[in-house]
Image (tube, rainbow, N blue to C red; front, side, top):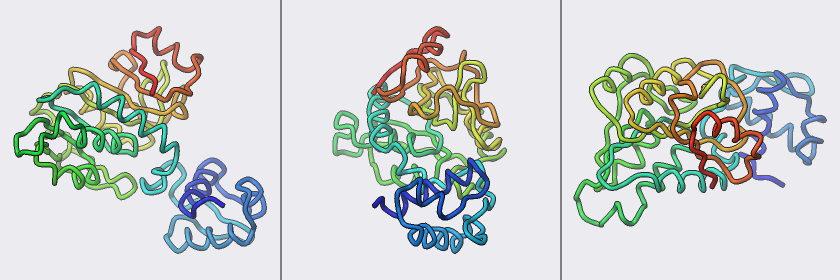
Length: 262
């Protein structure tokens, strides 16, 4: 049986897709008992993530935005490999931007633990600019990292700071690389996010960077979300998982984007 958080994430995704779910159908799809699904839905209702109905549950303001703690379990091995491949693009002394998200959180961890960047002393070997509170929380104890956190209003679902206070800082700085996690990306629409506020700060990060790197597992490719971050022409590198079929990556390569498979 899958761990509870994995099931909760799956149930929330089903709700985001369908708007409502029935206990029996969810149990059959996840391969668990109806009693287990009922307990899961009761717990999600307690957390105010869903509204319980007779025989199931309906969406409760999560239709397009799962909290970060539930996203973390999805495609975890792929995200870790993507993160290490992305982190390898960075040289000592670089200024790096990171938006919020599970994949960029893994990029931050990969950068923070690279042996050649952390010498064990207090010398600054890397500057990281982020609007993600969880990333900042992990990096603030790294003595070799100069950490710059934007201002802004916090979104509990993603731990990201958004709004004018967040974008104001970015107008004053430049970045060597920015690693952007996305909700979706395709050649026509470009990189996109479900929330317009997150798309705005992500767009500001991309505009300040010499190299824009999108980190996205194959489930995000050839898909579109509500708000545009940047067109594909502004993206230099796409780091994805090795399982991404050529049919999904070839259009990006044809558009001039370097493809790295991890």
